[in-house]
Amino acid sequence: MNLPKGIIFDFDGVLVDTEWAIYQSWVQLYAREGQEITIETYAPCLGAGYTHWDPAAHLEKLTGKHYDWEKETPARQAVLEADLELMGLMQGAAELMDWCSVQGIGMTVASSSSRRWVQGWLEKLGIYHRFAGVFTRTDGYPVKPAPDLFEAARLCLGLEKTECLVIEDSRNGITAACNAGIPCVAIPNRMTAQSDFSAANKLYSSLSELLVALETIR
Image 1: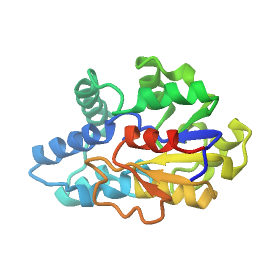
Image 2: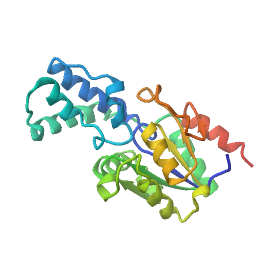
Image 3: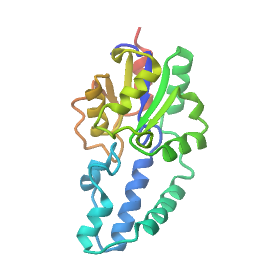
């Protein structure tokens, strides 16, 4: 792996451990209705949002009921955001960003989540200003595994594909990076630990481990 001139971060599950809280909010809603949703069933949502598979529609299919999602969604959102209120950055995230700044390595964020969600958390954590650009599905880009988000993030950095590195935690995200032709590394978390990351250039246990690897590149 060459030393990148730019790093493109996914958000959910890479910078902040949001995916577990989001999944648990669905687990609680399903349980209320006497249903179960496993990580394997929910997996198509990881890195892609609900475009490819919708847990709301799946719940309605299981129960045969129609729900008032204008009421249910804000209530579920409030619970999960409360769960995340004290959540900080993932292990090694702050150190990696500091190192990139010292090295002159540009940073962007590319996420299948909404701008309200991503920018809101980046601002809450005080790191929004550190990124040259933030790209989300509500900015008009197709979600992963489509390559558009990563391509936009790369163009923002003004770099060639081989000069960038994508950091992802989901199979959809790794596939998107591959579709964009940008080198990528996978850092699984408790939601994606069983995913197939064979398409990634490297697999690391944390951003801390990735930083150690990058520091050894000359």
